[in-house]
Image (tube, rainbow, N blue to C red; front, side, top):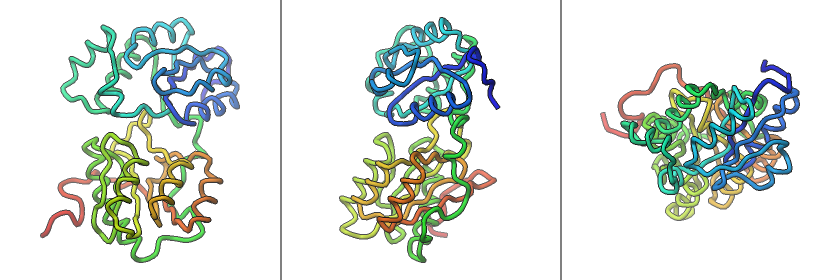
Length: 290
């Protein structure tokens, strides 16, 4: 358990959505009042009402963010809230520290970038910790979460989709695929889950869709943890999706009770699957012929 002292030196690096608010609430329930570094391009202005100590920085202002956290005495930080991947690579105006970091990266994918930022923070005396540390009840165990389980056809699509999704996640391409009748309709890249589902609906010609969202094989729980919230269920309803498969213990379900109730009302089956013990290798099942 984390320390419960006010002086424990905790900070929050906040992106968009409900994630930062939930982390603040979870930490506060354990007596921890976090200093917040809010990203101007992503974080909600409502955070100013929830945080007692808050500073705004732009995405590229790594030096400023570090200086502010050090001034606040932050020793451990949680990164919570989405930063849209296209903004990471198109909207950043890097300061000298971030520019140097970007130049040194052999690959420019999300894992490489945020992992390198975490290393810089550590060098500056700030440890980036598990982003789900204060939200463990929101990580579902393996099993069917809704009233109904996936039917035979949905289960077949899920099995097929899990193979593809784990394949692309292992390469840090995306975490979500949409399947219909054992055909891959859409694969997530930088656009995010909801836009991937909407794109799939345009190509499905009314066929029922199954959505599979997974973690990476070596998921770093400090950042980019899969999240499913009420907007995701709304996207599933609009697209005519009938089932959702997620990874157990690695996917955050925001507003969990309301989310499951909404899925039940829409007839959407939601199931959490154990993550494989071994890393998948080669082509995912069903993608190539024997």
